[in-house]
Image (cartoon, rainbow, N blue to C red; front, side, top):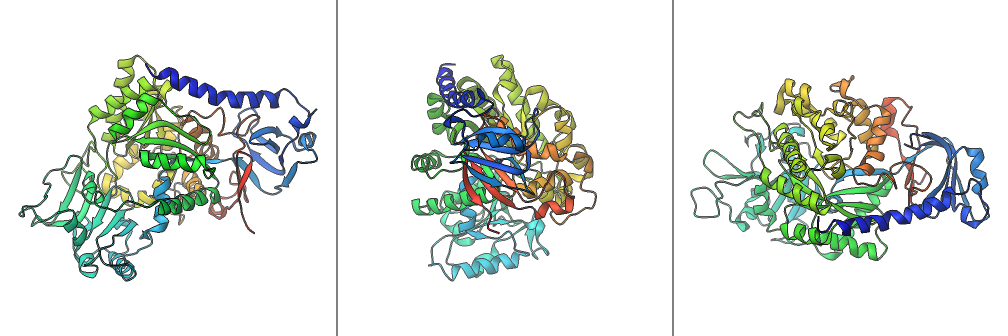
Length: 582
């Protein structure tokens, strides 16, 4: 526990700022000085506060960055002074600012700069788009694309291996440019011949860097031993290691695009799942320049041992705009590329169980370090085997240190497929499931092919089963795996339908969230999952004025109207950072 006092002092300093502010505001019921005059007042609409003692209100007053008053509309006038700005949001609703519980901020920005393949209906269309991109790029320059998914194509290529395409037509059409196209999951990529040549990846019978065996990854090959161009899980590093570094100018472009997207979608906080020291330095630079306008909760990339050792020594950084308090690990891969680690073989690939992408002993050791130095552990686990093993390692670490899990708020990210016996263990151990409801809408139509009906019914996307045990549930999009859209995610949470409204009753409807649960999963629960529920996640006196206004009442309107909801205004720390142009 050598460095724990540093963490405690940092947190006390952070919380003291809000305690002082809260005390100043709460001492008086009616204003008697300029201190009680609101800078901004909202009135006329409905406020869903997520505060158990005052769940619905009609007016709100803000003093600088904090909430001064929330309650009845006739009471808010007492806080209006000569300098107060008054906004009537009649006919609309206000909720706490939405918090993206699991995403990849810079990757979201870069997804807008690189080649977007999410709408490609066939592999042939992807090949054509890449060829078109090469026409505007000098030979030898990398072409980078993202977001293809073979299970969503209207037709499949004539030749596939394990249901995945071969590079041949891509290499023929784009011979002079190295090409790398990332699967939508981020857990596989397709490389053309030029990219594999640069990485020295060739047939098994050549004296090249053949990598017959890879821990936690796979080069997909055809029956003759030739690489198909598909690199799964850890094998991706063989190609990624040759990609050019991004310039500062492009980093700023990507950041600005990502931040603009957050504000337009009502996102006031963002849990960035797996950042390097370089990315952290970049965020700190922008924060120092006043350009960081989204509250960031950062998870350190757990595969960088030097990074972790440095932060173990320093202890967590706790700041209202930029907090470093979590470590992101990777236990398995994605279901779409059959990388999720399963207890039983894949229903559509005999003898294949997915990939353990890191030794479980490393999860245990990192958990011990996290407990010692005050860091939360957040581990990616999608398959039932991965989830079970991570729960085992967390439990072992708690027992070794004699601590209780709810003290540390360890998380498992995704939690898509569980063995039924592991469902109650989350609440029993104090582990927070961080799940992305939109994955159900996107993946469920084909996930049944991977798992079969019984496993789907018993333990896939079991939101209500987890909530019934008393554990909080964090929602998110895993952007750019899915588009950044809390409204679409809310719709998926309460309907369990695709975004086309199918099936009519929803997939496994008994697992739907209520609307109250869905709103909490995007506000108060992610705040709790970042140790920040005392300062945000609900609308209450003394808390940060992070808010969003919607044009429709998503808590009452019909299901088929939810997707037509628009964000009208986003407020972060009392500052209006986005306003819808009507």
